Image (cartoon, rainbow, N blue to C red; front, side, top):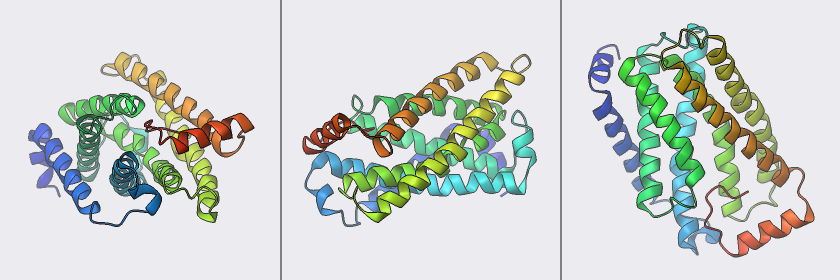
Amino acid sequence: MEALLPVLRSHPGPSILVFALFFRVVHRLLRTLPLPKAVEVDAFRTWKWRNLSVSMVHSILTGTWAVTCVVVWPETLQNLHSYHTSLSYLLVCISTGYFVHDAGDIILTGHAIGSWEFLLHHVLVIWCFTYSLFTQLYVAGAVVALFVEVNSVTLHMRLMLKLASAQSSSLYYFNKLANLFTYVSFRLCTQFYLTWYIVSNYTWMDHGGYFLISMMLMNVMILIYFYRLLRADFFPSSKHRADQNGAHNNNSQKFLSN
């Protein structure tokens, strides 16, 4: 691994593209798996299911990896500015490649309008992660930011169960509880820590203003989606249920449907 790090550091751009192609291969392999009946009858649901399947692979891989990095090397959490290891640098390379792949998949398949929230998120992440890879600064910060991928596992599962029309299943019920727990503990708490770190160290951080603005935009997006999540899964009004049923019956083209 130590021998690989100089190669990645010397060629971060090509490394990102290699890992983007890796996730494209993963996408191709997942296409061979059978689809739920409720999914295969509609072209948009089929694309959405396959897109989420690749996202699930990324979330399981990088979420586990990020937590492991912090457990094994606690300094990752304490020095977000300049500390990183070979494995943490590789992790950020791989994750950046995924976000490049996913943004390309959304745009090239013609779903950019319905997925604009995802694209905005991806642009912010790609810019911040790419900056870290080229400057070798804030790599630890990127690793900590990937804690949110633990919650993304349950978020993706939630959306996939909805695509499969399994909202009434026991799996959906248990997943929505797990999703709430991981959203608070791995997404909201992670965002709070990163925001606190940037605000506390803003005066000496390289490009602190950009990272502060990016973090604030992320915070707004995450809080809005948290509100949507609570409203949809825990406090649904009769009107909201009717809206959901209408969107479900009309095969809504919005990627982040509740």
